[in-house]
Structure formats: C-alpha cells, structure tokens
Image (tube, rainbow, N blue to C red; front, side, top):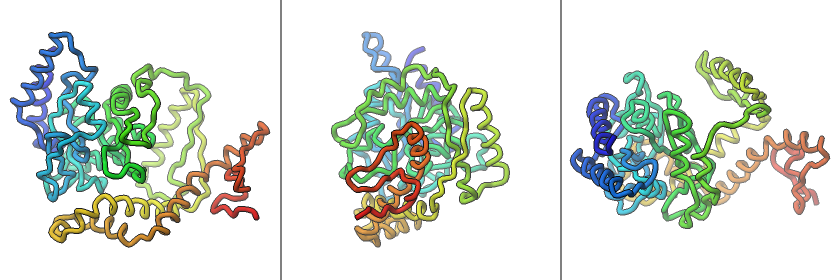
Length: 389
C-alpha cells in the first residue's frame, strides 16, 4: 500500500467523522498532504526509509509547537500563532517520517478535563457523542479511538493523558519526568509537573510511539539519557512474582460514583491470573496537604508561563475564568510559599518509604540519610522531619 493511499484513506475518514466529533483542528489542505505523501512514496522508491512512521498521517496535540502549523493552545489570543519551530518530540516524529496533518483539540491552555474552547468548540466522546471526551488530550484520544489517526501524542499534568484515554477506550501513558524532553522553551528547570507522552489503540503502539518521542536532548538538561529503543522491543515479560500497590480512593478521600471502585477492584483480579499480587496501601498521609501542595505548584508554574499574556488587559478579557484564577493564584504566591510546597511534596514522596524500611530491616540493611542525622525512612517520622541537634 502506498503512502498516498494511506493518506487518502485517513483523510476520507476524517471528512466523514470529524464533523461529528470535532477532534482534529487546523487540518491542512488535502492537496498539500497528498503532495507530501507522494514525496514519501518517492523516497521509498529511492530506498530512503525514514522509520516506522514513514508516510503516517499524524495530528499533534494543540499545545505543542508545530513549525508552519497554527498552535492556538485553544486560546483566542493565540489562534493565529504559527510557530517557526517544532517541539522536541515533534522534531522526532517528523524525522521518523510522520506527515503532520493538523492538530488535536484541547481546552484553553490545556486547563480542564473536558474539551471545549472558544476557537474550535467542543470535542465529543468517540463512543457516544452526547458524552464527555475527557481532557486535556481529549482531541487526541477521540481522533485515535475513531481511527482518524494511527497513533496520537498528548500531555499530562493531572490525568490529561490518562482520563481521556479511559473515557475513549484507548491507551494513554504518562512517562517519567524527563523521559520525553519538554522544550525548547525559555525555562527548562522548574517545569516538572506536565509531561508529554504517547497514546495508542493498544499497548504496543503506545510503546512504539514512546520509543520515538523519548531520549535525551541537550536543550533540556533534565531529560533522561537512557536508550529509548528499549520501548520498541518485546513487551513479553515474566509477570509471576510482581507486586502492584493499590491506592483505591485513598480511604474514602476521593469521591467515586457508585460502581466505579468495585469495577476497578474486580478488574484487579485479572492480575492474580498472571501471578501478580495486588496489595492495598494506606499512605497514612494528610491528603488535604497534598491537594494544597499541588494547587500551589500548579499556580506557580502556570502564572510563570502565562504572565506575559495576562499582563495585557485585552488578553485577560479573552481568557476563560479558570485560566485567570490559575494565573492570579500564582501571582499572589511568595517564594516561601513555593518552597514550603516543595517541602510538602518531599514529605509526600517519602510517605511510602516506611514500607521499604520494614522490608530492608529484615535484610539488615535499612538505609539512612547520613549527614542530617535524620532517617527519612524512619516510621517514627512520617511527616515533617525534625533534625536532631
């Protein structure tokens, strides 16, 4: 099958289904895309194969910069912005042979778990157009679930790859911080909350896309140096003896619609058939503190990114109330507020460690913190540490 035939098939499908679901936006002209597909075929005829995405039509989430294609971020302020550069992972998709056909819809600045904005409107669920698509990578998930694209990329700050994937029955994977370099951007150290990652209709497709998106980039100093090719390898592994920690609803802290929690718990029984043990875990940590910590760090980050746009009164008039609330919340923070939030984040990170302390001590090898005179794994200090004199 030729690249032209593939492109024609996907464009026909977009023409048929996108008017209902509104998942793909800023779609490039058909003749322009078919010309790129003909070029991809010509390269193959000359023996030039760019990679597994050679000739693939791909739509990038409308938060990531795409050279020559409008990147609105769902905001009327930026609806005419056409970047002169690509995001790092977009560069990699192009190098692997992908043909960028347009963007996938997102809420304004990616803020929200539903897809609507005043530029492109509402994206609808792939299985029932009357229902929520999830967000903020809802356009990507719906485009994928309706087979308007082969694979999709998204980004995740607080579930934005995962909940739209769940709502539309596809795979959304939030990678480890630094696995997919976030950039190039004017700030490369503090942004540690939102990560870009892959989506697929099955796990293997998602893993293959991750192998293309991941890998170190010198412009992003916190990116990881491990070989991304590992994700393109075999996913067949021995699961017997593995353990999964199950957090559930954090002992009732998170409200659940009736039936959701029991459905998840019944699904966990599948792991028993694979030889995997599932252990319920009580973090024994103040969840209200975790939530406030998240709000502080999110306000801080979003205010830093968007302060330039917010500074102009005419822009503020175009912003949705949730965006203004985030930015103004960040502008009210002090440096000590942000540092205190980082301390609280550290306490949350260390909260599960007493579990490991018990297991390590059975082997006679409990680790210590050394110079501070405080053992972060000490069960007697589950919250704020008080260094000894």
